[in-house]
Image 1 (tube, rainbow, N blue to C red):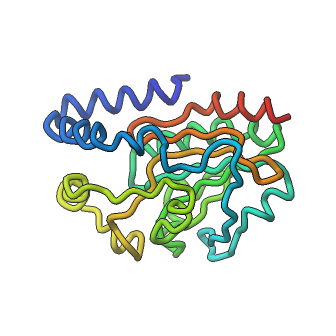
Image 2 (cartoon, rainbow, N blue to C red; image 1 turned 90 degrees about the vertical axis):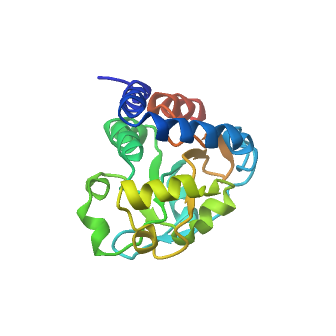
Image 3 (tube, one colour; image 1 turned 60 degrees about the vertical axis):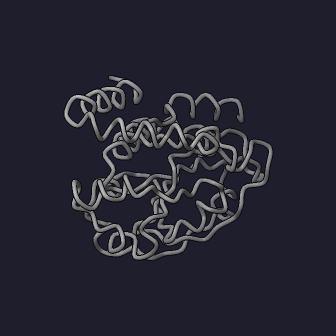
Length: 216
């Protein structure tokens, strides 16, 4: 089975071949967002993770505090079910979910998508981890991974992808989380993180598993 990096690299290569001008524009935007790329604003390892209470796709509130009562929590912020890179990442995490659970951890995926009936119909909510809705990227902001998406990318999503993010997110459509993953120990302290403004690049599930092994 290909690693997540091999899968995303293949998708990037396909994008460069099929839409080179757009990919050049993305490269330029990301190169200007160096602070985010370095995770400058994200919650640091060794710091207390902000607590939260967010609804799942059935509208039931889930809190970080309650999840931590059971053990460590892996939180991954993703842009939405419409993002092909997010789907690659979450499928890769689903494939490793049994190992993550065996290490006593709970996997939580958070995006700004509205927690209504439409969410239950997509592939992500057929997966076996917890999916939560963070409208207006409020919690992503607290974790330092909310990003005001440049107009170049917003136009691409509106015109080329035919995405109505205002409807999908029912909030500020220009604020999205950058891909970020945090491992939070039972005491609420961040023990590992991965932050990168390049939405085409994600943490490898095996890296998450190795970090969890160190906790146990």
